[in-house]
Image 1: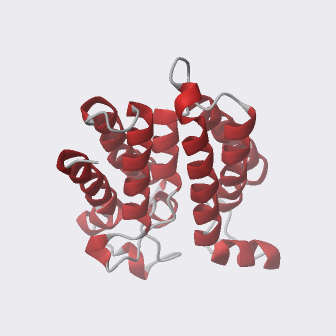
Image 2: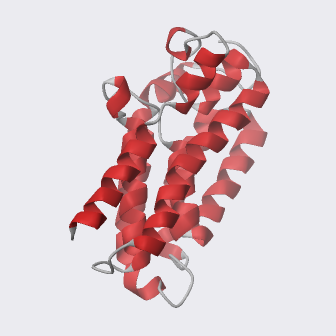
Length: 210
């Protein structure tokens, strides 16, 4: 892998590290790390700032992973297949969001950024995970539970369904499957506090304060 490719990987990580939720909160006079679940992601932004800010922060976190992945797909050196390199840069963005350089490596849970990356490289599997998220969310109103189910469905869908559209699917199917497994596990680990609250019946439902 040459220097430009390494720079694209670094750019992906740095883009993922941008704390969109924290900045939005500060612009509204609130530090999200001191309110609600103290997380800088979209769910806590919606809980603390109001529902519309969930969508704003989610869109920004989605974009900061999607854009680097798409740029990498177009601008990579060719040392890796374009979709594989896009996946690598996208995963770097996910890691940046979860372990951000600018916040002493204490970031969000990676749901929006992961959604963006797999929309870019594995849209069929990503669509299956989205359907699962929506079904669980509307049935229970638990964002965390919906995210956990989606994190389980994503790697399963990557193994069962075509990983990426033809003609590049055969070349990158295994990297997508491995990445989906690892990213899904990361999201589950990042939700361990939510899992505990769900088990105790203490988790907040959407629109309800804790």
